Length: 379
Image (cartoon, rainbow, N blue to C red; front, side, top):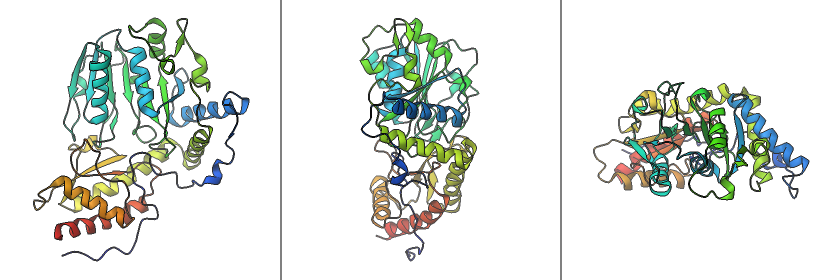
C-alpha cells in the first residue's frame, strides 16, 4: 500500500554529486567583491588567488613545505597535469574501484603507455592497498565518487616509499582526513565538498613531487597548460596565484565565500562533522528499511560524501529502470534533484552528503524516498 506523500519537503532539494549544493549562507550578493573586468595578473587578482591558496592550506592543514596551485579543467585537469608531468620515471601501480579511477588507468596504459600493473575491485569494494609495490608510482582515488567507497586511512602507504603517490581526492577533500605525509600529489575541485563553481582544480605537491618535477623530463611533449617547470626548476609563481591560464575571478570569489564560511563554522572538523551527520542519517535509514542498502559493503569504507545506494527488494525485475523511475518521481516532486547513480555505476541512487548539505534536508528527503519506492512498486 502506498503511503500518503510526506508533508515536509526539504528546504533545498539539491543533492547532486557535482556540482554540489552551495554553502547554506550563499547568495549572489556575496560575490560583489569579485574583481570582474580586471586582469588576474593585477594586484587585486593576484591577491584573491593567493588568498584562496592560503585559506585552502589553513583549513586542510596542508604542510608549509607543500605547494598548492590553482590549475585549469577542474580535478580532471589537475590529475592529468600530474600524471603527464611526473609519471614514466618508474613503473606505475594503477588502482581503480570505480569509473574515475578506471579513467586514470586508461590514460596511463593506453595514452602514456607506461609500464603499469593494474589493481581493480568491483563497485562497492576497495583494492587491498597493502598489496601494492610502493617503489613504483601509485595512482588512486581516495573517495570513489561514483561508488561511495573510500579509503579508510593511509596506513598501508609506507613512509619510506621510493615512488610517488598520486591521489585524486576530489570528493574527499574537506570531508575526510587526508594524511599529507602519505600523499605526494593530491588533487581536487572546488565544486565538491565546498560547493564551489566548476572548471578550476587544485594541485597539491609534496617536496618529493617537486623533486621529481625538477629532476625528471617525460619522454612525451607536454602541452603548455601542463608545464610546471622552466629550465629544470619549478615555476614557483603557479603556487602563489600566478595561474597558467586565465581563471574566472567570479569563480575564485565564490570559492573564497565557501572557504570563509568553513572558517566561520569551525574549519575542517566542522565540515567533516556535517558530512558525517548527513551520511549517518542515510545509513540509519538503510538499517531501518530492508529494501535499500549501501553499495559499499564494508562499513569502514563507506563514503560520507557520495553515498551510493542499491535497491534490494526481490519484486524489482529491472533494477536500472526502477532506480531511474524513483529518481524521476523525486525530481518531479522537487524533493531530490540529480540523485540517479552515475552512468557507469550499478543501478541505484547517489545522494551527496558533503558539508554544504543540511542534515535537516536529508531528514526531510528520506520519507519521500520511501514514498517513491512504494509508489513504483505499486505501479
